[in-house]
Image (cartoon, rainbow, N blue to C red; front, side, top):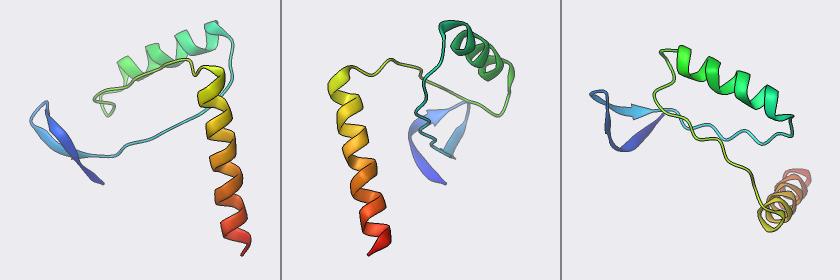
Length: 70
């Protein structure tokens, strides 16, 4: 639970989720439709990561998994 940067629909706290996945455009379209229909989802953002962002995310995952093993 985190404090939102600004109130949205009179709510000042909420959960932030980051989901990284690979999918066909049809799957993403269905996912966004379901987000719009779900009243528990206040706001969402879907974007395509460029190759540099994908490489950075992969390196970060590897660093986190290495720290957990130690």
